[in-house]
Amino acid sequence: MRVPRYSRHVAEPKAPIKLDGTTTLKKLEALWAKKVETIRETVQSATGKSYERRLRRDAATLYSEIHSHPLSVETLTHDGGRHAPEVKTWVQRVLAHFKSRMPQGVEWAAVLHLDEAHVHLHILAVNVEDPKLDANKLHAGKRAAAAVRASCETPSAICSLPRPLPKPLPPRPRKRALGTRPETIARNKVHNAARLAAWRSASRKVRAENAAALAEWKEENRTHLKAARKLRGEVPEMAAYRAAMQQFQDDYYTAVGAPCGLLRDGPRKARLSTKQHAARKANAEQMRGAFAELDRRALEFVEKQAAVGEVITALTEGRAQILNGAIVMEDMPHCLKALGESDEDRMIQGVLNLLVQAVETGVGALQPVRDEEFDGPGMG
Image (tube, rainbow, N blue to C red):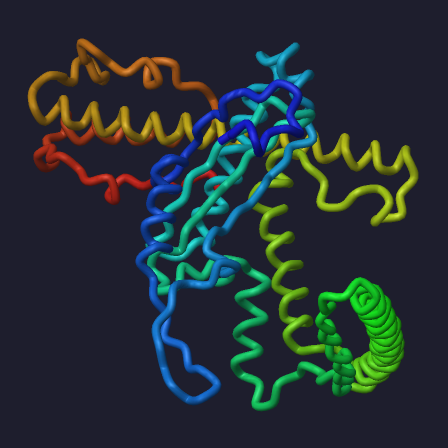
């Protein structure tokens, strides 16, 4: 939200641009605060007694994602007419992909930032249906790891070596009363100072021994854990986590990256030269153009579908009629007047011709059709 104390990394903070979502950032924050304040969990103490307490302060209750686009804000500012549609399409696909993988009952908000180096958006979500607002259940990798962990009969965690108990420090010496006579006071001061110095020296020695024992234990424990991990092999939870995250990245690339002309991997990971990487980027840009054309054609086809339904309704209600083999309508949709030579246009023209033939031959009476009765083949 660009609160000043949390926005010091931004030279000139600007208000975030609100995107799609079930609520706004401020309302989401208020909802989160209210839910966290009212949650109580039952825990069991070491003595076996049960009691209720508030949710732990470090509990994962807020799920967040940051999606960054390679386009710089400077480029977008200087040539917005060219790049704004590209960013808009990217935002729409990111949010659509997010909604498709979230469970029911999740409250979320999204904002776009244009005050840093690159265009990026933030998505914040609260798992309100969960009794503890567990945000880990919204994370693909952690959700997969938790499922594997719950199915394991024995825990895969490796126990550390017993930690050495520190030696207790020697008790601090009690001060001797100074007395009243000057020579007694001087003697007792020297005595107290000597005992205090000896106690400090003994305490330093004990602390040094404890530190050495702890350092030795850390080294032995590190060697023990390393050998045990090598003997154990890969942890099932981590394998599930890694596989789920790789699948998430593949799905994201299919739904967002490829249609927006973005690459799945960078040149270093793919071991490509500069020319090879440039060629891949050019191919990705061509794919983005192809996807954009498909989206445009799909939108036009949907508009023409709706226009045909409007014509049928007009014929039924008497606001249109058939004359000389053509449909005459006062407010004929423009998209039907300008049918071209594409497959979709020929399909729409065929439907209109069937309407004309049906009316001219008197086959049945025109009735308003439902959307599912005129669905078309789509643009897949």
